[in-house]
Image (tube, rainbow, N blue to C red; front, side, top):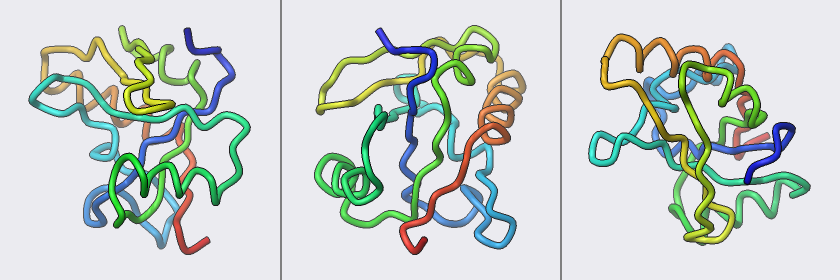
Length: 124
């Protein structure tokens, strides 16, 4: 179970349309679910320092990335019917699940998550 006040990080592997460095904002595309399984892969990063979070990404996600969108768990589960499903495969992994089958609703929910998230860039 994921605690309501737990920090969740979505690693950002793409630049264009995923965030704006100029405005320091996450864009909704960063949170859109994978069309293969309709889930958004994230990591539980509570009590981790930035260097350890970046190492988690390098080890389990990708060597090349731009940053992360950090959001509190309750800010995820308070959107639509979204849920967090921890599986620890790989370690600390959690998925945002229960996305709507309606495209417009998914876009709307992803927009809310993006607005609530804080952008952390590797270059910070």
